[in-house]
Length: 218
Ligand code: E4P
Image (cartoon, rainbow, N blue to C red; front, side, top):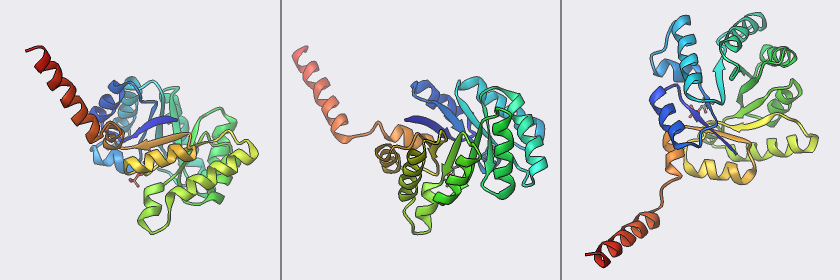
């Protein structure tokens, strides 16, 4: 399973990278805005800075909603660095743009996936990744993990190469359940990744080992 960090914060990206387990980064327009990254040049510079930290797939989202402008924006993003994955929303023009990028050899991440049918369509268009949003489905009282399970099954049935990138992963149990189901990738905030480290029995066990060592060596 690949671990992506879902942030545009360079310090958090560095911290996750320094752990040695990071495979890539996902961003979205909200995450870029949260970091105060505005204006074409700054946005482009920021994606380049992320690519310099992490040697893995970096999702950069188009803002346009019509096919022609999506293609223009996506091609500019793809030219920034070979690791850029063009993130495209699940719309009719988005599906057309994914097919266009696929034919040009440009990697894509189809975002805002909330149903198995949408995931099927994205795979048919040749998306490199699909991003089903687990937490946002939970937010409206449906089980987001059920959708991950459905998509993994459908892709296995037909041998689609599209990777299931579980997004909107909000806590450690989401991540662990995605791993049990067989999602190819999870993307989540830094605290979810570091949350995997924690267990009270690890803390108390280590404290006891160190105390016993100190007593024996006093
Ligand atoms: C996916 O790529 C999105 O950036 C993200 O995972 C959304 O998460 P949220 O629902 O916690 O905002």
